Amino acid sequence: MADQLIPQHIGIIMDGNGRWAKLRGLPRYAGHSVGAKTFRRIAEYCNRIGVRYLTVYAFSTENWKRPQKEVDTILELMMDYLRDAESYVKLNIKTHFIGDLSAFSEEMRQMMDHAEKLSENATGLIVNIAINYGGRRELAQAMQKIAAEVKSGALLPEEIDESTVAAHLYTAGQPDVDLLIRPSGEYRLSNFMLWQTAYAEYVFMNTLWPDFSEKMLDNAIREFQKRNRRFGGAE
Ligand code: FPP
Image (cartoon, rainbow, N blue to C red; front, side, top):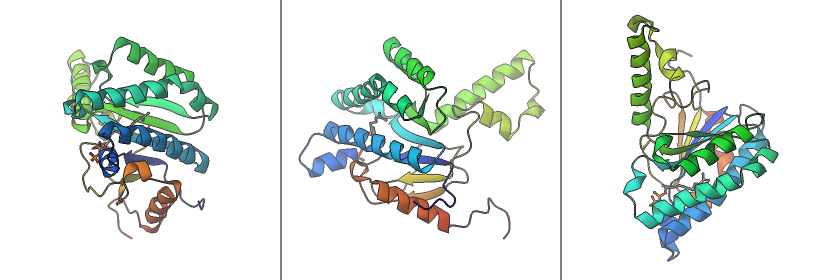
């Protein structure tokens, strides 16, 4: 991949696992297993080419409505990731979980904590894994925290600006998303990173996530590089 203007922060909605499995006569959860492998490949590739942040949508606040077997499979894949946390540290990848983590078992939360601590000194790619994540919930929780600060007298209402909101999101301290990729032929944001994608370039692709390749990521980055980013300003 050409080194010119690699996006600092890439967001990916890992969509199409269910359809991928169905096309092969497999149960939906089989698509998630292959999707998790794709995630690993793409995270390693992002790390190699110098992307600083990768945020992946692994489980939304709405995904609990799926059949129990499917929810269990996704959570089990997450546990596999957590058990393998050391190997990501060896790759110099830092792990961060974003979402309403209070919904998960004590064991899982401890493992997430452990994975974050284990990798806190990694200097390569920072991977945000969004689980039980919803952009609206993230904003509502940020508003609660800000309101509590106002109530305590630590903050005046007129002091609240965009940086105050950004500093209370799960991604506090991180740059906005530059490039948002959604495979699988859907053209929606689905409640993903509502605040952080305000100026992102969106690239939609027809491939289903388990088939997503390094080459396709290169293509999305090339598309990003071709676009002229003006952030609302003039030429
Ligand atoms: C959307 O496809 C995908 C999900 C809801 C789950 C994605 C989770 C993984 C790839 C595993 C993540 C694991 C780690 C370690 C990050 P879909 O099921 O909605 O597909 P469909 O639209 O074809 O039905």
